[in-house]
Length: 306
Image 1: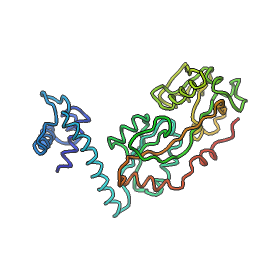
Image 2: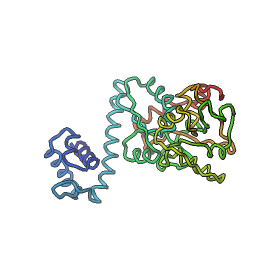
Image 3: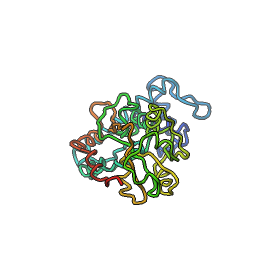
Image 4: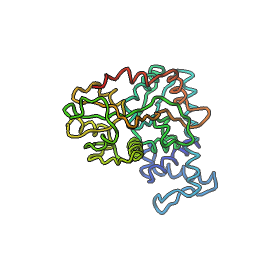
């Protein structure tokens, strides 16, 4: 029963509204309120500030929220582990993935699904900062993000591949037949790039600044689909990770050029909460990825640069 009470409490903290929390928990509001009062009685502290409605958590409530998330995560992991012994791993592997790694994510999930066909996978597109928050709040089992530029704290890291950038233009562009382009020259073109809240863009800005150049895109988007749309239109160029072409293939109306002066790569990897034992989902994903060579698979899938 205590586990159920903690679940109600975590939901209330998320919804910040008694009625919405009760609805999310599929119980009547008096039931949820009684559960919160029971927690307060058992722990002998006030957890929630009330004024005929939810106002916020007390300092003790904030402490309990952090512990509740960990307890519920461990309880669910225990249940999944025991169930897995009887009928194989079931449940949902929850992954947070930065947008620039999305084109390669099926190389991970296909191996996990082949090893655990009864389990399903839920993928969220998140910024690197959101992945860190979600891991610490036990909202995801793992994340795929950058390892070098803005390293996450209190996580276990598994390198997956090295990302490099390519300059992409419409096949009618004056640079379309070139094999490479310098960063300074690329930055001077009419660009469509990801927005500054994305680490991908912050890496590019930092690299450009190191050679005395400022990135000034005429269009920004929080989605690579938005970037691709403007590339296909033909009036804009972009700088994208090389795995972009793992999804879009040869794309005969687009040309890609290596970016040089400087040549730059950064590590993309799997990050898991630093806990022992790991959750069954996290452990199963790690086991499924043993021996994987994503660099080789991405390079084999990409057509030669025009």
